[in-house]
Image (tube, rainbow, N blue to C red):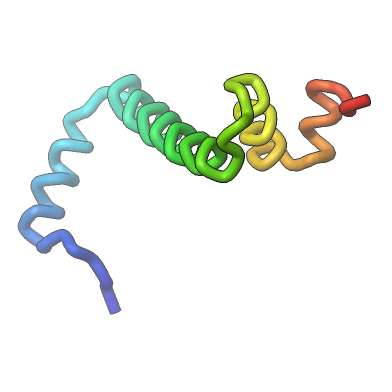
Length: 79
């Protein structure tokens, strides 16, 4: 069962556009999607922690994104 809000005709057009894109253009789409997800996630953190400054918001996001263990390995454990 295929669940999609995209019609088969539109999907064919979309696939043709992707086929014609350079690898760099495709990679740019991935980076844009990642950044959009990060922005949405950080907006949620700001709503959850309205008194947090931008550094604290980033730290919360990084911990959630990387996990506590990797965050501590990369940035050092909070003392």
